Image (tube, rainbow, N blue to C red; front, top):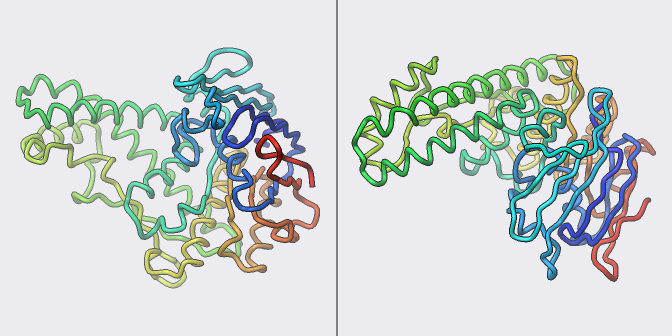
Length: 365
């Protein structure tokens, strides 16, 4: 099982101090809007690589008005081992990580902890820009392949430098060759990992008995497709250099990939489905992610489901809670009232977040 058994927040967002002791069950957090529920989920999201579920800067996570920096500490159980994880940011500085009191990178964090999430901002995922769908998919890919974070960082760094050369109208091929080699190698890894993840999700959905609709997924490129090998991708970068010079940016690569979804049983594109159906398709993919990891001999990821009940009726909500319990996943969920979690019937750990004299306060029950 993958789970946090303790979590301490210090000067994080609205929380001056919070000490949580978890028993491995799903965690249901309720309280009024603005009380600080989502801040707890954001803290948990930082036990994986990246900028967390809000994609905020380290400085923005600091409690106001002090802005002294913040610190998170947790005991993490993963693969029958226990890890003490700390991550923090001093005022004006980048986020740092320690695992078992030793300095570590965010990529190291990804080797031991997988976290995926659904938040209200994703409710329009199927109808807005492709960037959000790529981020959603890459979070799932990361749960299967922790090395995906490194490949993405390498690709983005090389592409930024190549784009700088393009904007400055540099035409010397020697300036591009090394960057395009790096982009081709890391870009091919990214595309292969995404393709494999989509295949895993498809198989997990096909094999499941679930109350949630299956989503038929397809990766597409705005330019028609990516070459099958790193060498071919590098050649495509070279051949497209004059076109990219005219545009002032790189027009080919995995940064142009889009994820299309279709409500499988109805044959309706996800973008044309109702709001409730679109939400159900996303929930279905998160659950498929967990099943696929279990099928490969692993544990389900930690699930963060912010206000997930907003578009689910009582029957489907009960089905979601039953699937979470059956999967053995530590799901962290938020809602405005405890009645939204009645269908857990005692199988979840209940926490209340309230406004207190010093900010958000967390109490059991």
